[in-house]
Image (cartoon, rainbow, N blue to C red):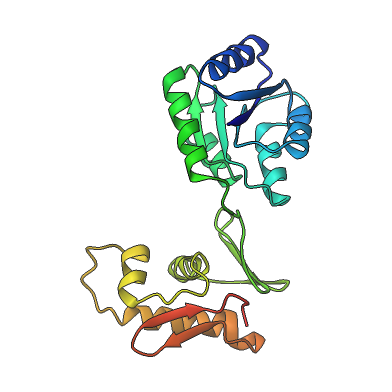
Length: 225
């Protein structure tokens, strides 16, 4: 397994390199964000260990740039910044895991192995179906260049549909993932919100992306048709 370590603390980065090599990893090291981005672009890696605060380019920017370039290599942020919003920003930028310094080396290795097992499947930070785009972090939705005004619940229903394009999702599926398993209201509430969404994201634009599959549920046309 080949790993890239990007950290401006030279002794720490070399210590991680030596430890990972002892565990059977092949390791490259960069000491600033610019070099780290170059390595990531030029070489295939199974995972990237990325510090947040670095000279040249921050870990946030490196991760955002890779995701914008459709590079889905698993990224583990390793940083002394332990604020909850630092973690939120890192994960929203496209990181897959977040470990704070000081850290347990065996735990770091275990987390890397877990990331590698999951592989580099596509995990876009902005969801897209045709010209319908949804940014979960910014809580914004566009149809083409038009910014749409959705309520919080409408947004969440649409996000769930867009995370499962082409799949038939039952009312029970939607309720379990948008409301919760303990929801005791009328399941037809899903129909109400689907109707709201069609009036917001489809009909004004002459689209029929949100389909009803009779007796089964709802499906988002993968092309946003």
